[in-house]
Image (cartoon, rainbow, N blue to C red; front, side, top):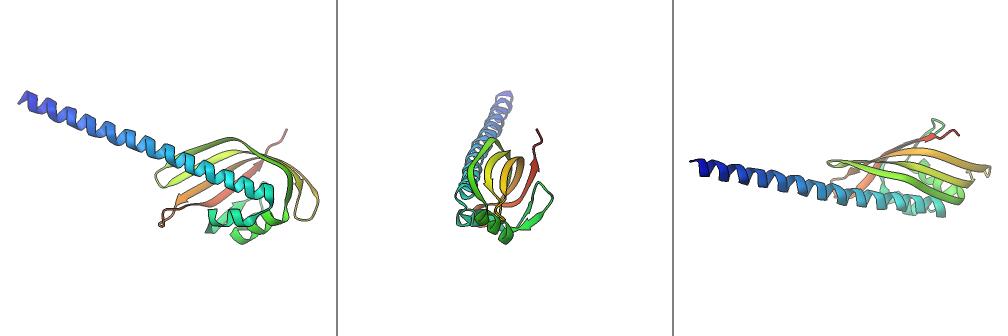
Length: 150
């Protein structure tokens, strides 16, 4: 009877350990996927190409800018097209996974011109909320930026 209990406990521990390890590996894969999507977003900003960004944003995407302005998907894509960056980079990018949701955070520094042609010198922190959609694709549903004051 003791051997049976010990065998059962060892099997249970093995099952729990395997499930935990599988979840860790899955989270790492999601982190890598979302990080790559963030890099595509950055590339869309660098090249003023909204076509790169459009498939990454959910239809009901909402952005809150550092100045408090709220834009939806269509307006956000128009801004990407209108802004011209001479330089743009992300730093300190981190992704945290919560099942079918991932929160990406990081910093952005960029120089260029805004949609009206005025000079831009951007230094901000951002938070993006990504959701795995029913079709299996990851899309950003919300983004928020906060200006970094130096």
